Image 1 (cartoon, one colour):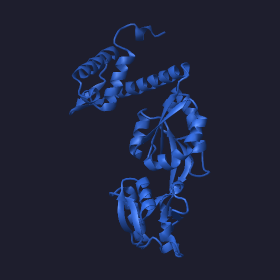
Image 2 (tube, helix red, strand yellow):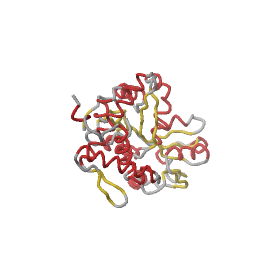
Image 3 (tube, one colour):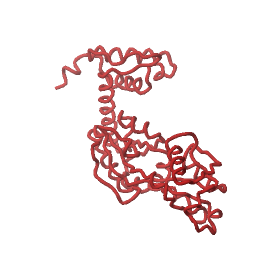
Image 4 (cartoon, helix red, strand yellow):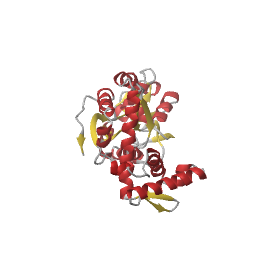
Length: 310
């Protein structure tokens, strides 16, 4: 059946693994991590694969490489094959199967972590690996077969990835209880209130500044943080408030902080989804079970739906 494929030398799992390492690293030198012997081995193995398939798989670009169309296709096929074989081996030996999830720090800390026991109950033979990734990086890695799921905004998901709604993520103002005591005019509470927020000039800061300006609200930013969980820590440990995803409520008992809905934050509502790669779902049946477990446990609201191609 596979005599034409296996009847000649040059193809092996070891060579395919080396090729995938080079493709992921973006260069032979980087994949070899400075080891001249490994660098020579990787170069030779890729050359042997090119001779076996009769086509160019990589091209030099600066100090690195880029995959040709054939190389990109082989990289995908090799990853799918190795992932399926790895799952099969683990199942035969009754070992755990690794499932890799990419998401932002806020999603990991406030949505996934509180449900870890439930996820482990639904996936007793799985080993979960949580990666803190920016949205664009999580989507890219999912498309490349480097991670199994991404929990991201719906608008960030591109074809051929699929999206299953987990509900909507909205934002609220979290105020230390001592600062909120006695306040009645919640609409004006934020005006001039000392705030902790994200640093830099990213999408959130830009949107926040614009929304505050339209609402004639003066933002008194006193602390800048690299993530929402750090801003939440600032609320818990100092006299500052913060605009955070409402799921941060799990970190704030009433004695610590008061959650205040602010009207102009309604524009920040985002539908969040569990993104999957349909090719990996086909070759790794365990991912179907995992997708169901995530949809049942890690939800922002009651709204869910079937996976839909974009």
